[in-house]
Length: 459
Ligand code: GLU
Image (tube, rainbow, N blue to C red; front, side, top):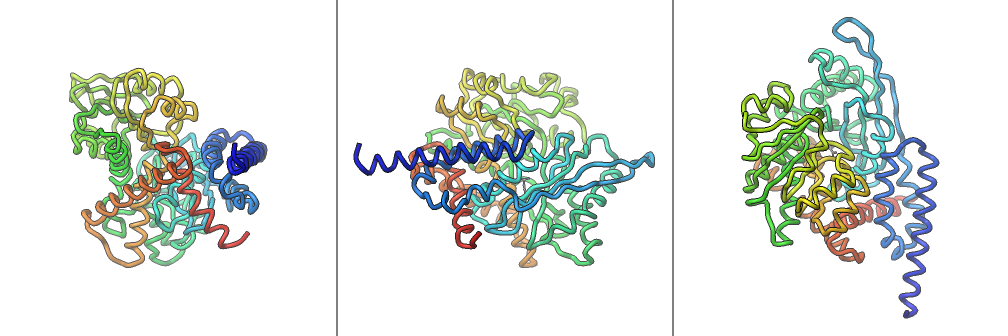
């Protein structure tokens, strides 16, 4: 071993020890937050080669600072249901890092929401947003409110109460929320209406995902799904493959899933399955997207109803079975931890060639290991699903400039951004000795920009 190699391996050991200790601190300081631990663990392990090469990040405690959010706001959300009963939910906003721009990230309304979920999402958002190359920091929020089965009026009253409190903490140059699971254009509309009342000003850039008629961006609805497919197409192309002629399984049937299916189909793929929280559809001849759009975007119905129009399709109760279906490309677009080790092994056995994460953290740490060990092309969420927040940042730009771009302009920019993210991730992976490992590449590329900004701005 040369002197240089010895020094390098000593620095690697040093970085490993530091990361090991930091993870222990994070677990101790944030007990009972398994999703947050998981997200931090994944990022921190990827950063070992960076710390080995740049020990000043350790000396300046950059990561110690990053794993602690600037602030976590938790608040009561009281509202009155249609029977006149008072209901109480809990609202959250985590403002994780504004090193490179105002806090930015969606709001999730789902009964599973708690501090751990919001912090994992907010932490991921720091690196995702940095990767896009746009000036946006990391944040996230939401509530354990369950929009399922609620009337339009109940949704409105809930959103108004939620925003009455949240309005004190956000602003176009402070923190810019958007949608996530359970929060779409309707909710953003009610939230925006209440924000306007609270501050007495028309501040369009305070929220993204707005309706097109009042400051929203064309292409925002499609952006996460389209972006994920653009990213995966680059990854496939570099391996001599493509969507054309492939069989694809897409979980979920929300915004991300629907537009991932649409773009995959446009590129010549056959999508054979999608799902909701009750079960999945398997349509061997290819899913009819018009039916899904009608069920989900217009009628607010369940996947189960798909087979009424397509009797040759199967509907199967429960979600995990979707990963037992043979496919070339799997696009998990439902929710966190939907692919565990067993599901990943089954996908590998069935010959999956690529996995692109449309949802946030849909694969467990063990599942990712299985994919990487079997040389499955793997596009991690931070990179693959960054198209949504990218177009949100484009919406902010349009709001600041008080103009609107055409769908073609937005889509062209989205394509450029996804290519930039793909290149930044592959380059960083290569540069730090893990060629082709986009998990490592995306984490490193996202981290370095934020770390440099933090160093420049002082403790
Ligand atoms: N919720 C989306 C995400 O996970 C979009 C956030 C945004 O547009 O701010 O990235």
